[in-house]
Image (cartoon, rainbow, N blue to C red):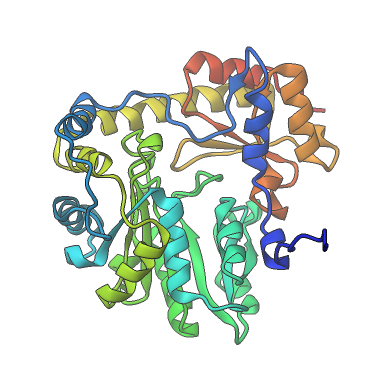
Length: 383
């Protein structure tokens, strides 16, 4: 009898663990935690959105939908893109997904073959590294430095392109940095992609939250080479609803139907009904959320200024990127775990977002003002 068991692939073992989720898992075992690690909006979902989802459940609207989503939601998203983003698409170019995570995976599956390379921001969101690895592709980090306001530099990007480079991931507003790309930077990045004949995968999940700079969608400049990843999670506080979407250039519907059928079949119908209500109903809750996050960020940065702690002034999203290199001893991951256990505050270690994040932490400002400020007060004093 052979007692050996089959082995997992080297590729599967190469997918990195999320440093954010590791902190969360530890925090869930503890009491009295100030939770500032995970990007979870602290505001309630608007009543009309909850009512639409509830009504769908009570009406037994629980059957399969089309792979791309219910027609009403796809049409509403297409209208929103034309109105708000300057992107003229048809409903057949919109594919509803269980959150932006699957939209990103779907986008990369359409354009990457095994061994292909995709340029990803460093620091950048964790799934930008994980998703390509799961598809046997190679994530290649492009560094975002404070000396350049954490904006991509075209010359640096040019140097990273090889014959295997197929795409670049852009993220504005940025998670974890809170950076919003000015229009001239977006145009430079589109020109870079055109110069090297690359796809652009544009993560625009935080588009509703910008402070002083308008959000610019790359697809409004070159719709033929951009795959746009979007979500209802942050804009409408529907993180657990799991509704996102992918916007593609004109692509054979049969191709995307096959991908969706193999991955998810479809998103649950009540969540899609709630998403329709979110788009077509009053937007007061979104406006209020933007004000709330901006006021939280202002209060937090004032406290950091008072304490002499360096940070990146956020232009968007609801995060603070804080320099704790004076305290972390070159290992911010271990420091964040100790800080959680000893001071009962969870923050995301910057190294979870790439090597360039060493010494930094990401603080989620989508929390109560009291928790946010108390968590920041517990940070160690600067040297």
